[in-house]
Amino acid sequence: MLVTLHVLSFFLIHISFAQKHLAGIVFSHPHPHSCDTSCDVTSVIAGVQGSLKFWVGKLECGGDVEKQWFYKQKFIKKLRESDIAVETEKANEQHYEVPTEYFTTILGKWRKYSCCYWPEGVNDLEQAEEAMMKMYAERAKLEDGHAVMDLGCGWGAMTLWVLQNYPQCTVVCVSNSQTQREYIAGEAAQRGFSDRLEAVTADANVFNTDKTFDRIFSIEMFEHMRNYERLFQKVSSWLKPDGRLFTQILCHREFPYAFDTRQDADTEWMAKHFFTGGTMPSADLFLYFQDEVCLVDHWRMNGKHYTRTLDTWLEKLDANIDQVREIMTKTYGEGAAKQIFNWRMFFMFCSEVFQYKDGNEWMVSFHLFRKR
Image 1 (cartoon, rainbow, N blue to C red):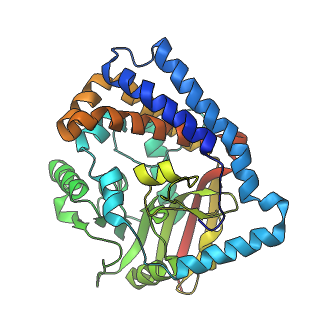
Image 2: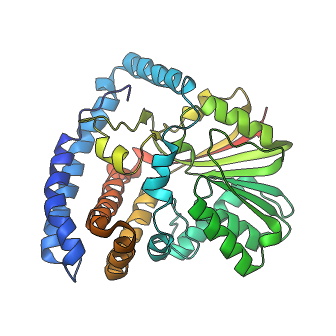
């Protein structure tokens, strides 16, 4: 990272402590919300909360606006010099080749592995998934009959939702994961959508297509990218003259940074286990990369919507701990306890981050672009 953030040592101490105790409890204890587990969880959360104020202070360079500008421009320059994406296979291993059964257990009906929308009156995960995807369609002005690309499609939530709700739309969904492609293709076949779907497995660095689209949706995929200049150049070539690109990202309100796997880096644990090669954009980062696309509109959403999503996933994990344990053991053997521990830490850590300062420090950002 270009803005060095030596701030998570306190958090990592609590991670180290919790890993010795919490992993064993999660793996063997019949009641994952037992008193012992709660004590360890409380310790970890306290460590995260104690670190965030110091972390933000480092990002803000002590309030020096010239330093803030300098580091941001330096970071943008480094992005321009990078490959489109780095460590793509590692990212697959960390998220997208994890057993499908795990995600069908913890996610909602649509298997939406991204922030959901919890407006007043929405009280369950299925409703929150639907509310967010309806918002995407409205903001992108999606119309029935459009040719759609779902870039970085995850487990196919937006792909399958579009196919179900817009019966004249066709969708090309793109993922770096063969596991995800097989799942989406299977779901589409069961629902009678196969004739309107093309599911593609491809690395973002090399993927290209001669097809053009009315709407391209990319939901929490750009955080896994680095060279946005080259990425937007590619995406622009896939848009029809009146086409639109709609993106959703998790971001910081002002300061972008990379996830760093180096020993003692502040993002070391998160980078090694979940976001190797990843980027935390700032809400305005893409505005610096408009050679091939032009911003039409831009929205922000309070980070507590992501916190509630994460908390719900964690609740489902804990409520189904025996099933999760069985799934992880089949795939990871003796490493199952560590996997369960890591996922619980991931959900808890991100939950605390995105509710910091009442959800106004780290947040969700949406962009709508047109072809230049």
